[in-house]
Amino acid sequence: MKYSVSGMGCAACSARVEKAVSGVEGVTEVAVSLLTNSMNVEGSASPEAVIKAVEDAGYGCELAETDSPSR
Image (tube, helix red, strand yellow):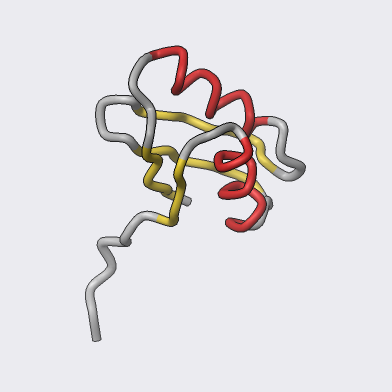
């Protein structure tokens, strides 16, 4: 799942977010991009748990808009 992350200003910030999310039960892989302020998360963790972990680390987070075609 793709998320938008706000508040990151440096590589240490993105590493902090990555570490926080990797600790969430059910997360198998996480990749944070400082350049695009986005994060991809693989695994069975709920979006709520992922967002809470990012917010607890001091950053903003929400599910990213999907590129799926509208009906």
